[in-house]
Image (cartoon, rainbow over all chains, first blue to last red):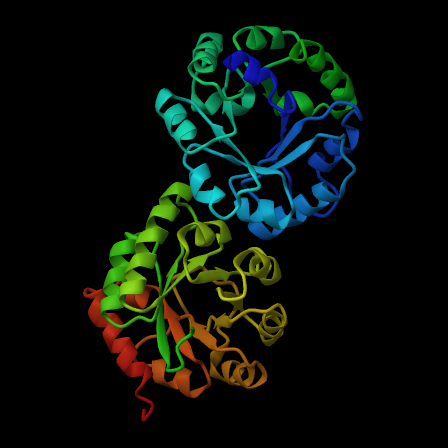
Amino acid sequence: MEDIQRKESPLPRLYLVSSGEENGHNGGGLLLHQLSLLPRSLPCIVQIREKQLNANALLKLALQAREMKLPEGTLLLMNERADIALAADFDGVHLPENACSANALRAFAPELLYGCSVHSASALYIAEESGADYLLFGPVYDTPSKRKYGAPQGLEKLGKLCQATSLPVFALGGITPQNAAHCMDEGAYGIAGLSIFQDTAKLAETFEQFYLHVNR
Amino acid sequence: MIPSRPFLCVITDEALCPVTLAEQALKGGAAMIQLRHKTASGSQLLVWAVEIQKLCQQYQALCIINDRVDIALASKADGVHLGQQDLPARAARKLLGETAIIGVTASSLKEALQAEQDGADYIGFGHIYPTHSKLKESSPLGLDILQKTAVLVSLPILAIGGINQENAASVISSGASGIAVISAVSRANDPARAARELCRALNNRTL
């Protein structure tokens, strides 16, 4: 039953996390360039995660992203800040493990979609209790951006998480079109990436290759 | 409601537990607590905000959250205080509604007038005197600019920066509606007593 429900989730199967290197200057950033290159027929989740930016700059970036013509079904999510998500008319918020719970935010922003990063069983419990709409798990494989946080979690842990929850799980960390199928086999709902989407010359191609594996 | 009598706002100190400090400040008569912590996690901030809001209700004081409109909404705090790098006051107003209190930091007459136009309820104006609480590149504004701004801006002005028992009365005489302090209360041996003495100094304008 749960598997059927999972397949019916309206969420896109690909998930792009912004680089974390936006400088806040109007118009020049990588994110807006990435958004302009998204293949028309392939929707994805886009999470703006730019902790170095202040709220003012984040709102400006978010409003610019919102202004763009995006593939139908694409969802824009703001990292942690539900206030900025609302102010920019975003679709949701992604919550790191130490953020406010989804329930606390849903009380004033019921229309938003809430995702939770989950790295442990206790975090899963908290995320489910707080009414998360999806989970983000990683790093599955070794990836430069996460090396400072220790060893990758691996496929086995991804599989255990997917079995333990009925929520859609996005796998993150070192995933390529070549190894994406392994994550899907473990029960992942979709694939999230950061570095792999930064090669903008190949972005459309990367999307198309990923979609061959995630839409089986 | 922002108090009509000269009042004390105590801003929390990142080095100390904000709830303990808030309680001491409220005991001493602070009418506004601003929860300001730039490095705490969202869940930690929310816990603090809920506790401080509860305390503020007991003491009939205002609980204001720095920068984080989301935390203010989730904790049902009285309002937010926004720096120039935070969400614009207009965006915050849309989210918080008409009854919430929105304060905006201004360090010039121009910024103060802009904040008024953007629908702020009060202005945090400073720094008035030299201060060690934050590293400041600009020079202190002084009482003359405070006075000029207080005349030209109709909003209550909360003076900040280097204010202590000795100079509090002259800040009020120059047109401020209140004062905001960090270290003058947080770093005192007895924060409640320091707050009490500041409140007394605020209403002693014979100096």
